[in-house]
Length: 515
Image 1: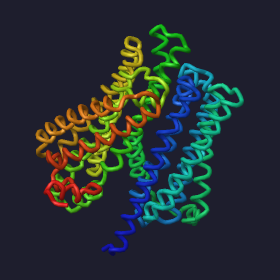
Image 2 (image 1 turned 90 degrees about the horizontal axis):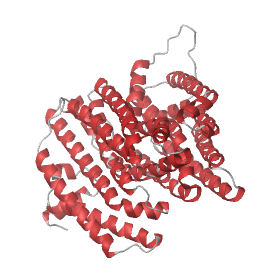
Image 3 (image 1 turned 180 degrees about the vertical axis):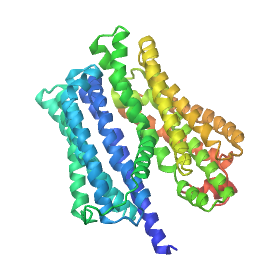
Image 4 (image 1 turned 135 degrees about the vertical axis):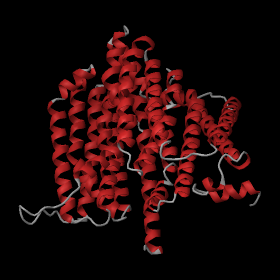
């Protein structure tokens, strides 16, 4: 049995890691604002075309590989196990670096813009550190030393953002092209990876050990590890994969619609603004949505069906509540956000529809987690492939007809298909209760939220970007107050569900009329 101190240490570690993740996500979301303001929509287009490749490395090193290593070895892994995994992953990631670096020109050609070649080569360097970062972070997390990987993540992101700012300044002062500035900005990720790797390695958490003899079998469950990496990656890479599909299809589709290259890149650049808003929405949902997964895992191990369904119910309801509130909130605020953060309100309707991505992605991530704890891997992969194929087909069909509105529609419909396929399988393993009543109450709450937010924005009219920012803050506070009201007075969540949230007990006492 774990002592109370051990449990407290583990809990504190999770809190530290969560805070670090929130900082990282905020930094990741906001740097695009000055980038677009200075380099314009064409500059944002060029950066966003390549960013998904960098993001793949980020998610592998920050989430997928560390989580898979922790799940595979736990606290029992030996130095030679970690060494073997590190060397193999490093070999694979180095091979990926060489493929992207050498084939950059052909990849850029497939994207419809050969000017992206230097940026692709810059992005490839990040993969030289994937094995090191992923395994070292996995080791620390497996031994519940969360502070070290948390600090490494913040170091990586801060360096990246600083170099992006340098790229912006040099663009202004040296008359650089958007592609030259983009190349320097992308190099920032590789430098961040390097600094983070040095920080993790200098602690020497384990000795790099090979098997003692050639015939000495160091057992690593490669199949289990590989599947864990894939599943963890899939749950985190949804938005990124959809952006990769856009990188290879949108420019071609817009040109097929009759737009010239300049017009196509501008349209794509405006559409890429949505990535920042989606990141902001997912900060909220992903921070609180997975609090019950460890408890659900324990209940499954104990075969306690009552607790299994109780935790699954609470997980889904919390996810739906936060994601719908974030999605609808972003739709209401987007006209102002678009003009405040990005100088103009171009494609507001298209971007508003795009915000439904927050709801879909949050539900997908939760459904994947619910299936993963039941070791249901095949349904996840099938749903993912179905979503990807539908996204490609819908992009090719809709964008030539509807331009970037077609891009938003294809994203949302393909994610809905992904969600429905996943949830069909989730319903085979869990029993959900009182969902109809919950959905009706949530629908009423969203109507109240929309009315209150719109009224608040009407009372604080936008005169400039500063007053627009004040308007956004006021509207956001109003939205939060409406959600609290719905929880307290409309009983949107029960006490069993509420107690798992931060300040949940205080909200429960408010419900009961206590202070």
